[in-house]
Image 1 (spheres, rainbow, N blue to C red):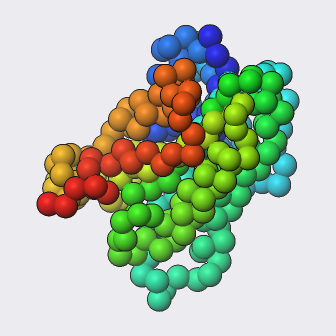
Image 2 (cartoon, rainbow, N blue to C red; image 1 turned 90 degrees about the vertical axis):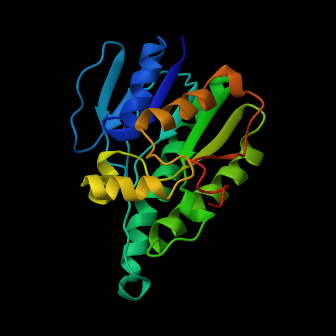
Length: 231
């Protein structure tokens, strides 16, 4: 049994990660902000606002085997209509939040001796899409952070990032709220379907586990073929 921390574990991909880790009999500590999660047997939930200045991680065990940082946003706007503050708010949530969490739990991760960090990017970083400048900028920073920390924290801590395409979660609800929108988005992918939270959670759990102990600094594209295949 290992001890894992899932930041943003109450809905969507985070909730799927929590459930899969729990089903594998690991001890899971998960945080939520606005969405109070349903109780799961071996999961302990704690409130955390990642945009706050200070975090209380007194609930963590002395040794932590891995963390996943799930909070994110999908702010799609034409570039000419974006206020620079929109970039700052997104960066605070998606990048500075992850940095603060990693810095604060680093001593716990080091005591594991074989810990893993999982972050999230997006297919839009490597594949240019209209109206994605905000999220692509933040997630591009996440990819750079992943590679830099992989060098700095090895060999005792691994860090990798997952770059999904659109996934059927509450975060993407506005883009998938009709059958027509779902089908239209599915048809853009070579595999002709929308990703599910479990598709992404399975990769996250793999990166946390012993099966991936020779992987670090990688950006894993779990995107229905969007980034690699041209139709």
